Image (cartoon, rainbow, N blue to C red; front, side, top):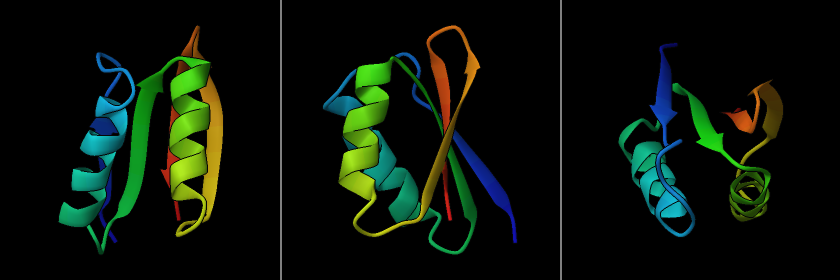
Length: 70
């Protein structure tokens, strides 16, 4: 399985959701990792995606988070 990474640190909600949605749709069979900035963006995206995916998140730098979809 390939691992695909999307870096959306330069975007804020609602663009984070739109970019993540397209990324997920275009990489359906791959492991997906999304890098984003800000705790608020992380929480909003987690809430949107947790209905359809198992999610794990971790802080990788100051105000930068990694969201892994399984």
